[in-house]
Length: 237
Length: 225
Image 1 (tube, chains in turn brown, green):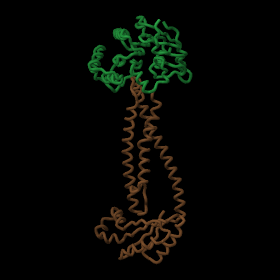
Image 2: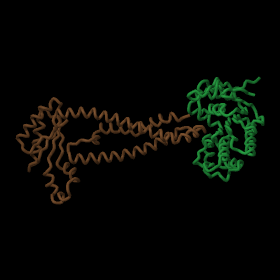
Image 3: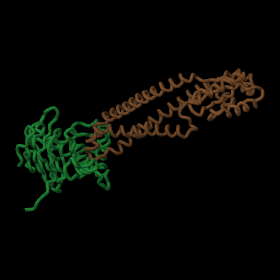
Image 4: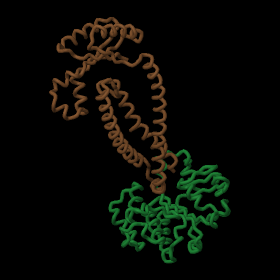
């Protein structure tokens, strides 16, 4: 959890960096991330009317965007003290604003969303597994006679299962690519409107990507394969 | 006296279809290699169920079926598949792939039997010629008459040269000429030392005195001569 500080640049950008070194000196600060006006402008460009882009130079537009300092406290305990110090800074610098939701509200929402997220994941998993099982059973039922003749003639279902797996995986990969592109497109659009919006997974973070990879492995490969094996159990003779 | 191990053994086998239809009741039976077994009895006496227990389409409710003293229940999937590759099954309801051609239906049987045949195309056409079906080789099975489908089912069963041939009412839809042709084929097969288990109540076949006759009635084995 970070405190976001918006700094509207004066004519001398050095002031911003002086301010940064001032904040760094505050003992409660663990880390500061800087979002530059260039980055904000870049994200906002696609949503700005073309007239604005034509009539104003990049330099002029950039001047309208703030620097954003994402200031991370050492711990939650340091949060109130850090906030007090930063409020003092805003009082002596008119071009600084603190942008942060209420601390307790944030904790409350974080807690609420954690439970909500778990419920969402549970419902989503249930529907996903049920849907795959249902789809497999429909296919099994449709192919029941052919499967049984094949088995009675001495065949085995190994290749059938693999074929079914590739069929399912190809559909799932297509659906996944489609929904992921949509998700990233929406996230990107939201983040251009709200610069603080943080979406998952963050491709620059190894841990995020690892968790995302595990999620993909489970949903696209492992769960479908297990469901195929389970659904075939009633049809093997 | 030379001890001969039974090829198939039924030990106290009963089959009850839910909720309480007793299809087979306490069957004890041994079938030896080279036997020509005629299973007979009225409709609903349990002939088809007994055959299904042999090729394991059904499992017994109680008792055990053995193949060369190995209980079926101990066979793994791969072993069961290998066992079925040595069977030639002629089904009462044909069990053909309706969307495939006559040729493809027979070819699948040959492929699944895992037996190497040098010129399988020639062999398939030879059988089709024998059953006067060569002109229909590329027709879909669903376009054939009942009698023709039955002939395809018979070819599919025998072309793989199985150790055990199981035939369930193979002559039900055939004319007397075709029945006699099939009987000749079955006799040739038997002379090669193959085991044949044939379920029928066709008088033409029963009057031939082909081998051992097992009579079932209401699920019970009533005669074995």
